[in-house]
Length: 97
Image 1 (cartoon, rainbow, N blue to C red):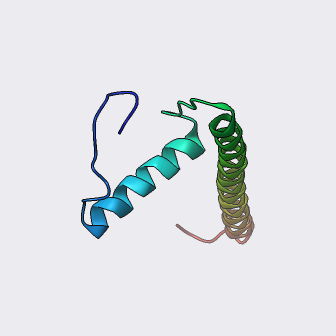
Image 2: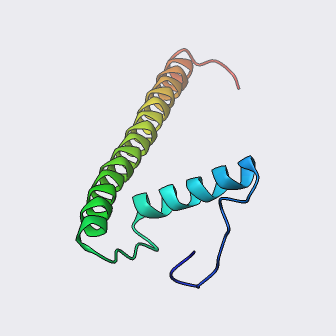
């Protein structure tokens, strides 16, 4: 049962794909920190661990994306530098357009 909206998903009677989707939904929600309502101490500890691991995973993903984009920018600058050198050489050789 979803505690936020009081919806009974009846996950035990659902077919396999629906069980998988519900499990995926709640795994993502726990990792992102939304829709987490621990009711006692044990659940609070487990959700705290899950939120901490989710924060580390998110930081890793965003860090990797930042690294990829910086590498793309670096490659673009190197390419532009090559074009500038070619244009300079063409001007120095007085080649026609």
